[in-house]
Image (cartoon, rainbow, N blue to C red; front, side):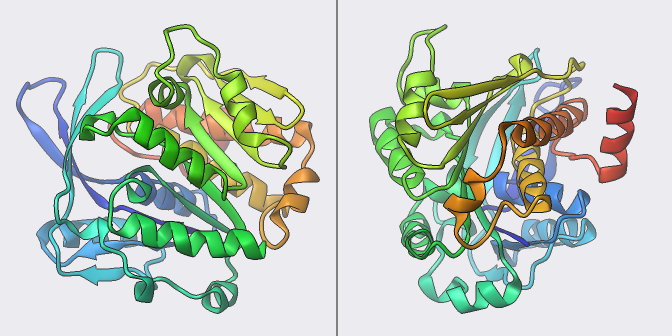
Length: 325
């Protein structure tokens, strides 16, 4: 089972056809990951603080209708967080956020399952990242909680960096935070845009040395998504493997990175590469296995790009696209 912790909010997505018109859809990077896992048939649970307001009811309905496990979700008294998404000509999304005092960022230690409970759930991996690890006060609580599992080697920790500059973060402060969380993560996923912003790189600069610096001599695996240029897999000893993308007509990129994370984790789970003693398990995964998993995850993400909003494919839909390739 994959346990996902983090935000489940409302995206107000601007209509391409009618400027100033917005549609309220359920979003949040971690909720999107949970939906993508559920549609792929991967066992999962979402640890989220879901508001009891009308938007919160919409979120809960959407998650439940997609088979997302909410056994440990919190019914929160605070209002639902809102993200305003404007879609550019190429399909890329730009966000602004209303997150002050809202439900997603107020996790307490008492709301988080213990190591014993996670073991009883059959958890093999914990997926976290994006705004949940950037906004307090809950982010520090979750980081401390996750660090205990890292020290114990009891499950695989997967961090999706997914920075949000629109919230006015300082790149140097965010870089320090990201590097700290990466240091307790066995798997890291980032986009090249994430890294370029965090390190204030000039256009066209290589991210390779930065990523290998994160890895050092650990067994950490880093996936860097590069939009139409595909995905690069990084491992220790300066290993970089490039997996090409599938050409698509992009509607928007909302949820594509989240879909990639879900299918990457699902692929690793299927070959028993997640769980207790995560370093040894990941070290045993061959480069050829990683290429197969990454290719499937990238195809799943590309299908999401062909759709409006975060609508990950089911396993059947993914199989049809793979068969026709």
